[in-house]
Length: 269
Image 1 (cartoon, rainbow, N blue to C red):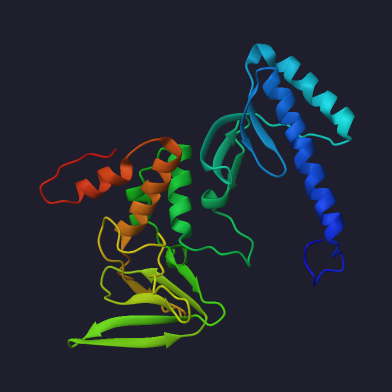
Image 2 (spheres, rainbow, N blue to C red; image 1 turned 180 degrees about the vertical axis):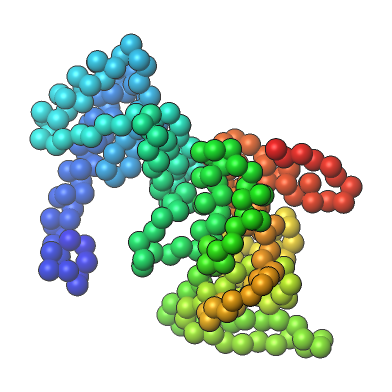
């Protein structure tokens, strides 16, 4: 309804549907909170609520009253675990062992979706579900495409690869869409250039350098089979630990950085 290219384009209908849905959910949240049920997650189409076992019947009564008032139907699920970094980024396991993921934790994508650094989400969800060490998971993973990252330039911006060769800085201008992975043997970096550009380096963390130092890339628009891709596993492991820390109140990323220092002997797992 919000797309001018769609035959369903109708801004008034868009606002009506959106606002009605939002206010209806707020009404449900208010009713639950007033009765002592804490709503821990709320987004555009659903909520997650902490319900004590002895209050389950009353919880469902409030929900049924809301359904009768609004005309909407609710679907219910129970979770054994929820790990959440933001309201739109979470990993959850239902009591029936069904996995639900959103945002940073998604591992299965539609064909047209951005799968950048999929290895990070794979490692984190495997850790949260089965306790698998992200270091082992990432270093033993064989699919190079799961390490690949997409960089896109829009408008007047363009992508520029830069490296040093024989004491000289070499640059190469790329098209609007670039695929690459983080490399341990490269000295190449990728920048977004053009009007209004900050020259920010594109990488999995969207900032560079980080606690592990400079980040280097291997251009990979044309995939070639290699015995050893020289992947910079440390950067992907660091990103996985950062995501785990964000949803688990741990400090694994910092411990990992410390463990890489020659004088430090730290056991992560």
